[in-house]
Image (cartoon, rainbow, N blue to C red):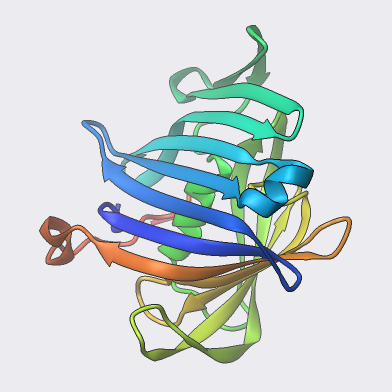
Length: 238
């Protein structure tokens, strides 16, 4: 996993209003990696819709291909609270989904990813203008193929380390809700290099648009010198 050691921080806004912040940290585990995300509204937005979402996604590589093994979501959004756990029982081609201490089991072939691991899988690919990727997803009781389109245009954006960087624009077609967003149309501006660092995100919601702008980025010094091969998508041949 080439992104172990990354820390990213984002400012999150609704249209032109600052709404809060989010962070993503990718750490090593004994078997593979874990991605930890936290999103929160600011004090002003807390009055209207307080959000405190903490999500962890754990995965490993099997024969060079990514495989999710656990996705935990602890959500607090105004009066709504939930603890959701998705266990990818890939050896049995099953997924166990638990909410409110009630578990359901779904037939899901090995190779399916959580939405966060799918994001890492897309980043690791060679993203060329006009290309379309398909990633097998299981999220919120739904199994589907996430279609990811790389748009033909690029854009120059300022990165948090002070440089202006060329960004490719990626359009994933989500069918389930994400942090701060409902399901639907989304765009990601990623650096046009091997790391594909997300500089900006835009998601259309029921009322307007949500934006996220990268404000901090750094790698653990121990990981900066390591070279990693890109992971293969689960449905791709070597």
